[in-house]
Image 1: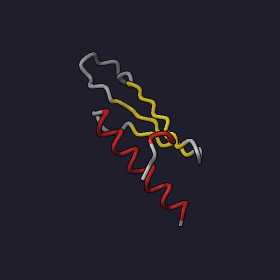
Image 2: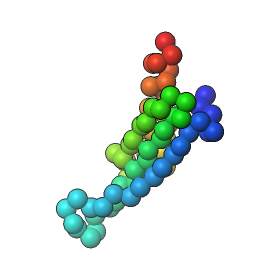
Image 3: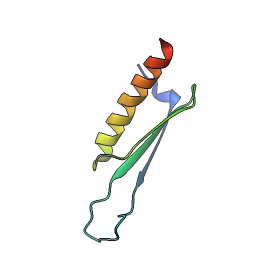
Image 4: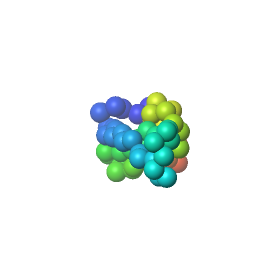
Length: 68
């Protein structure tokens, strides 16, 4: 399990690429695992919560793969 003390979590809002005012912005997340320096970035979902969940799952998968 991930220790929250080992994580640095940053978020951002992306600007619409095409300049449309009504375009829904995505909420990106970057998770850094401080002990290993592993960085995971996710901005594929429109929800910041969904991106955070995806990023944490990918970090777990990455770290489990490095441990085996």
